[in-house]
Image (cartoon, rainbow over the protein chains, first blue to last red):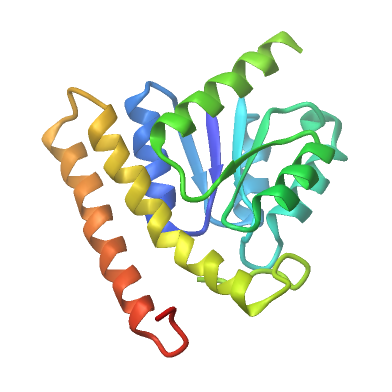
Length: 122
Length: 70
């Protein structure tokens, strides 16, 4: 199962639909709080995490998750429309991948598959 | 749309680019999904098309706003 954490409704809908067409089970959250509640119900195989969330940022959520043993090595890909290099470096330091906006669904699919394969090997 | 936290957006230009990338992202992702995924149902195709139209309208509105790139 893939958890999408994205507050932009059209991007969330596109991610969800495209991943479902690819055969993944998907759960979506629109805020860090929603995401934490979803994570209490079940642990996903992968999280797609937008950085600019309302109230609690994606960075803060990512930091919180990495401090929790249950999610310390969970594959996470951050999504961001911010300058790429800064985001990539910061994501990498927190053990996460990065997909920059705008993206096409082939890049999305390739990034998701790679992260899941890497997660399965670890 | 929410305001990004202070530590993530350092300049108005970065904020502006970030905001413009949101609808653009939805358009590119949905359009490429239509191109890539074969065998979509009519409902799935309509969902992607609706996202493209809605996001393009939003992007157009944003470009009409004061301060938009010339």
